[in-house]
Length: 251
Image 1 (spheres, rainbow, N blue to C red):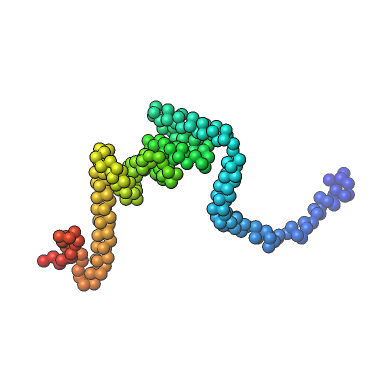
Image 2: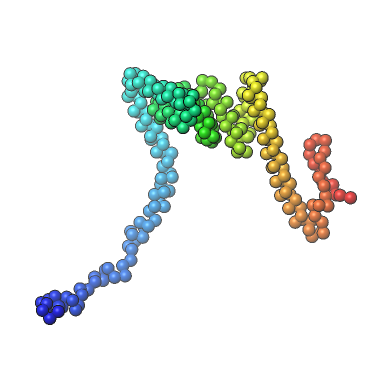
């Protein structure tokens, strides 16, 4: 320490002062606002999602308008090759590989290939049904129907997916689908078997809803009757000839 120059000694004894601006520094108004930017950006992104989709669609239309007939033919040939590969995988039980090939066909198609793309969606729905991806299969069938499917396969596959999805929200849609299918083929055995299974599922759903409704009504009834020393156990429901119910007091 004694051998050190005086300048260094003074530096060691009295460290340089920290600038006042760095002490107890607070974020400026601009800095405080920056903490709120993510929320603002999220709101802005929500507002522009549809606009972005429209812009991307317009861009795609513009690009496809520049395609030559030869280029369109090459795209169609490539998509059909993807579909053929998908059909081969499907025939050999490779459901995921088949689904991927149909997805490539969909992604590679042009906007004018509506009929072909409807088939690609329908085929992918079949692969997804095999994988029990019920909601995804239903969406594909809906898309195939929107594009104008050349046959009833999307309708048939959607009916099957709705019936076997084990989701009660799909039962009413399945009823409508099978009505349409049976109108064209009233004696088709698979449709008739599906109709029987569907009627059973609908009856079970309705019975469950009825029990839930009666349970709720029973709880409310007990609340109202309690001040009078009564409960719903003092009453009984009697079904009438019209299918409705009347409430009678037990003797």
